[in-house]
Image 1 (cartoon, rainbow, N blue to C red):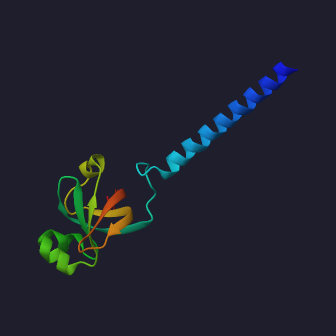
Image 2 (tube, helix red, strand yellow):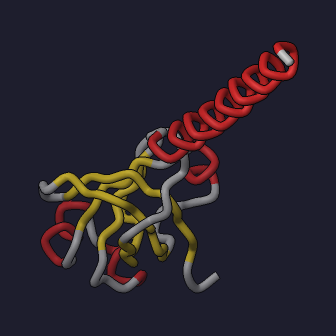
Length: 125
């Protein structure tokens, strides 16, 4: 009788440990800031300037206008201007004056604003 009781307690402890482990693993993946997050907002515009791992996207301009404007002129003429940080694989697919749609979660409130692109896709390819 004592052996059955011990086995029952060991099984209960084992099941509790497995359940707790599963719970904590799920919490880690939900709260981990390195996990890809779905974008909550989107903007469309033209890439006006490019640096190592970031691009300046300005909305409200046509591609033809953007090609003849300097960065300063584009900042004055455009509606929204945002510097987006990109991953290297995102950056390698883009070039100056591409029309893009960028998904992001948050922006730094400055002008031009700053944020991290979660998704970026070329328009009119």
